[in-house]
Length: 483
Image 1 (cartoon, helix red, strand yellow):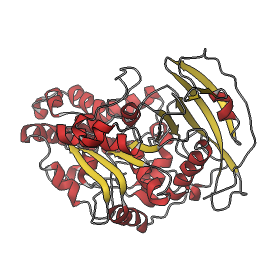
Image 2 (cartoon, rainbow, N blue to C red):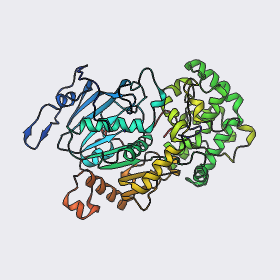
Image 3 (cartoon, one colour):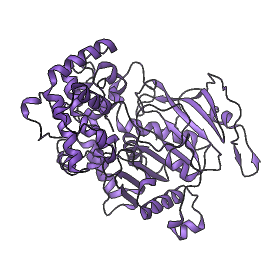
Image 4 (cartoon, rainbow, N blue to C red):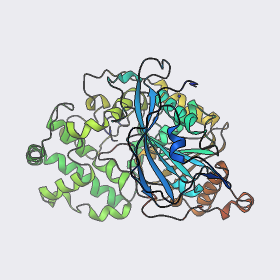
């Protein structure tokens, strides 16, 4: 969501017919589909009895059933007769007697079993949805005007309505970064679906052309020593543009990279370099400053190249790096907005393009027009209507420079910041009293808070044991710098 970061809903008619394409290859795991002591139909059969739902595959995971599914969605929820597409979702099934967490990262969905923090906290089921227009969940042909936050929220609304008959207990939505934004937009347009919302590191670029908050952030984040190191490497990469671009040309030729969308290798090079400082703070911790060259002026070309490549990635703005993320850049340039920053420590003669707009990262064959009222509407709604919502940010995450804020109309809603953390900030990283309160509220919203937790939130703890393979704790990193 930034002018060069780039990185970075009812219907009562269910569309489609039952398809049972694919076959489950997994053995039966331990998880059951029971309500109390009464046996029910096998969960796979229940899911596949939903009109428009089809099976791609089932994967085994002890204690769960994990399904990768397709669900038939209308391309245009306002005009459902005008075509459909297949949207991928996954279901991590524990038991229909447990609450359900509805997750989206705002990008592609992972087909590997995983459990998000709220799912571990409530010991529940998890439904994950791929965001529309991220392949393979893209209509063909693609009418890009149907890629907006309301259409995407309507996708979630239909998935929820379809699965609520199976998972009848409480539902909590969640997501990180663009997924946190998505969970917030879903709540804005369908506020009666979810019982709670946990939005992690969700940027809130209300006024697209007013980005001074980011400049202020970069003058205070971390320590002066670390900021100086990063700034010096970034500047040096522009000073040494000629020799490093020769290296880039060789790298591009060897890797088969092309630069048709952005326009030139030179534009791509500068975009990668200007992402460097932002990228470090988004994905790294203060302790990682030791990995940055201490004296950029005397560092070798390889040392400068390797540092920038490790943090920003020189394939980021090649056609091959941009293609997967065309839906993101389209949204950034039409509704989400795209922050920009200044570089006071770099002489103007070294910066040719500055932060480039999202338009530069979307093929010119796709028309784009910015809608400035979209984010203002969401921001106003959150301030005055937020209910059962929790926003979690990281102190050192640039995307948190413009966070969601709560007004007098908000009730049982919270904005917490995890000290020292980056774009991977979570409830576990909050200070103890906020961590306990956040955990207690999530348990309450999901309908599984014990009497002791209701009486004393400080007693709140996740109901499921941590599983190092299943539970996600690291920052959700995209190949380039995007929310």
